[in-house]
Image (cartoon, rainbow, N blue to C red; front, top):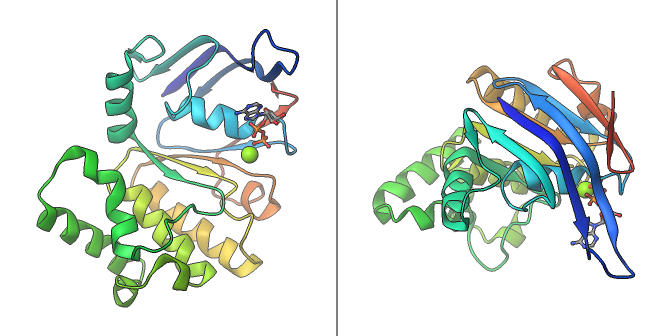
Length: 223
Ligand SMILES: Nc1ncnc2c1ncn2[C@@H]1O[C@H](COP(=O)(O)OP(=O)(O)O)[C@@H](O)[C@H]1O
Ligand SMILES: [Mg+2]
């Protein structure tokens, strides 16, 4: 379970361009459930996701991850929690061009310092699971949209995270590929993973897979 208590994020605090991206968000996200953050562009979804995923620190408020209060953790502990707990699927997938699908999948595991052979085996296993074994040596920019999407999911899974965070994952996919994305999420949900998706795509938020929808407006959660 993830609990947010009065989380606030202010950008450029005290400057003329100060902006309150997340105003006062209190929320409990159940483990092993699929939660959607829904709301118009600019409503604070990405900011809230990056706070939940320990990528951004809130300006105020607290975050509990299980029985741990993570807001006050020093940076290196936060980095460790992030690496072992979360997998991220970014908007536009953010695959690194110029390197192969296999290398893209392996990258989030490098900080753990595992043996290359073991890591490579696991990455190949994930690629095979998503029918991408024959694409392992393809450069990221050679992949089709659907392939890039599946490589991004494989990359998110490399550290076997209990929580998957996806930011507008279907924004650049057609309806068929968006449906396939949700089917893959259904499989990961059946494995017991917690899934949090920010989206304003009906293919996502109207999916039967969704256990809970949280609506955001102007940095606030509207229930
Ligand atoms: N790094 C940043 N610096 C300044 N403003 C930002 C930054 N990131 C996001 N914002 C602003 O915060 C608000 C919320 O953005 P975001 O969380 O990306 O919303 P959403 O994902 O719902 O579109 C927007 O007004 C956006 O311009
Ligand atoms: Mg966003």
